[in-house]
Image (cartoon, rainbow over all chains, first blue to last red; front, side):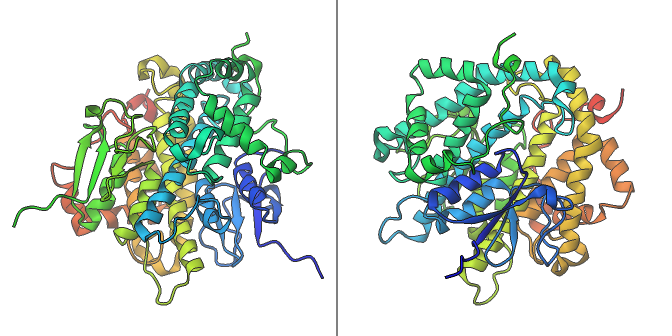
Amino acid sequence: MPKSTPKYALIYWGGIPGRGEYVRLALQYAGEPYDQINNNSVPSHMVNLDKTGYPPHFAPPMLKLPGGQIISQTGNILSYLAPKLDLEGTIPEGEDEEAAAVRKAIINQFVLTTLDLNLEAHDTHHPIGMMLYYEDQKAESKRRAEEFRRSRIPKYLTYFSQALEGNLEGGPDGYLYGKKTTTADLTLFHAMCGLEYAFPRRMAALKKEKKYELVWKLKDRVGNEPRIASYLGSEERVPFGMGIYRHYPELDGED
Amino acid sequence: MPKSTPKYALIYWGGIPGRGEYVRLALQYAGEPYDQINNNSVPSHMVNLDKTGYPPHFAPPMLKLPGGQIISQTGNILSYLAPKLDLEGTIPEGEDEEAAAVRKAIINQFVLTTLDLNLEAHDTHHPIGMMLYYEDQKAESKRRAEEFRRSRIPKYLTYFSQALEGNLEGGPDGYLYGKKTTTADLTLFHAMCGLEYAFPRRMAALKKEKKYELVWKLKDRVGNEPRIASYLGSEERVPFGMGIYRHYPELDGED
């Protein structure tokens, strides 16, 4: 039997996990095969890749769908994929349309908040302009990273801890919604990996405080989900480096 | 007949249009009445306001739903509202589930890209930290605003012009999807109003270039939709001021 073509193709920059990783983790967790197309091989990421010339895409990641259309915006791709990959929680029997809309909205809200955190982490090394080199915005980066470490990381960790505690169904293992892995869990997992890579000193100190234990429980739990564990140990997982999460010791409070 | 209680309540800061305005415009366009609750009257915007203690909310805007639940994240609120307010394009007869998902994804993609633009506009006056005063990050703001004016605004305008041109159904009046007003149009409308308020010099120069004419057509068209025009002329429309879009002449290239 010939190997079938994967349904999905992820178009993203090569060499960094980046925002593409949030999409990869969803596909990997679900065991859904996918092709990868390096965005560098695409003339311009603003050029539309499907046949219709519409819609154009502002930036990768982009996902090529089974019908040939291409969609972009990380949170949007995850909303699209969630129902198809069974990543939007347990669907109660007889759930009506409104209850389904609320369930989707809660999960989507967590995803979008994590993506805000992701952008703030990026902006610690690019506070002035994403088209400029880090070296040309080092002084500003130092200031922004200090704010981020001091005020923003704890604020996000507090929020996610409250969510994990408030989700009474989830128990002690760290589920943001119900007791089933969703795109919300996978997204927060990766952001936590990224923060620990970029700010090891700060994150170790926060972990020691124990206040945010449930967030680390989620991180460990997701990392040990069989398909995720196997993906993380494979060559397919692109290591962190010069992407969104970067480790500059001076931005982690080491002078 | 007693006046019925509105189905929705928008929870947001008073005194600025802010991100709440994207939600207001959707409700206004649809003629859907709503209550407004000032977020200042809420003990903390991270505290959950519904009865279940779950989910918590990272920041306003938040929308109280007919069932009493509260959801947050602007793009998420708009995704939730779009089908209820008939703001997600014309639904073709016999449209299947997959086609509906793609239609929603295209509109949502435009909304999220506009909200990225919205955040970048905000960060021109808060490049270092949103909890610090503008006065304490003025030098950095000047650099970031310069990048924003020079490189980012034209990049976004190019993208949206391509979308408007690529939407063959839309004709010359500026529709991002099909030929019916969607959350995408309303969101871009408000971002354009904000950019013209904050960067009048730069925007006037870009308007003169005529390259982005379709984006201004959309802006004019939406502003003239009867319910929007009447809302804009009313006291309910909060003027721009010290919110996301701020006019600092020095950030618009006036030294």
